[in-house]
Length: 290
Image (cartoon, rainbow, N blue to C red):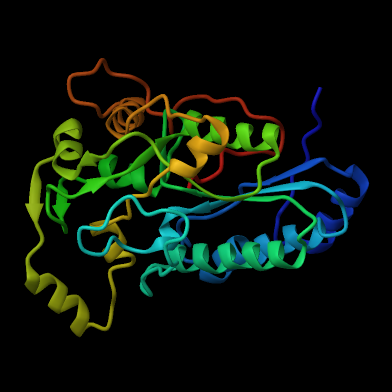
């Protein structure tokens, strides 16, 4: 039976002690925050410094390192370019804190790999993760709002990955001990207008005057560029190297996630995941999916 330990990745000393004591064969780093919740320093210390702490703690062992990064590191989609491969430049929008953290942490991992050529590290750049047990800021955009604010063209699209497909990809990389950078995403995309229809939200275009007012007040809409045009990535490398293939399309993933929240139009009412009683190992909480 597995032993569970509560650990804060910001605690470099304790992290190092645990790794030295347990001597793991594989270290999978999943910790990350999508939103600061008002604590920007804490978010940075978790997303960036925490990743550095993990890499420092395992540098002297022989463990295979798997780090969950994010497709947000590619930044907003530029023009009609889609299907970005792993060689595409990392360039997150400056107003998107999570994206900037993803770029910095990803580069830390690449630098670590260059310095430890005898080690295996897998950097997994995932598209937006949704599923029946995911309750993150992306889900809340569609479940907590009274209407869908049209910041973007309704025919723009989202690329999603089901939580089970992401786990399957991670397990394949672990089992095969495959190193490198890998994009992970579900099949196809789902249009923003389809998302609004599936949740029953009325669409309202946000006028240009609103942006001007926000700018005059010296404020910014956090990650607006990414929200309007999230990148679409190619998963050719992962499929070729491991044989991985997603079980769910982006649309199916969205439907499943929204139905779990009790908001899917035409579906039987269910208990929203936030209200459901879920059992977890002592000291553990479901992470904010990336």
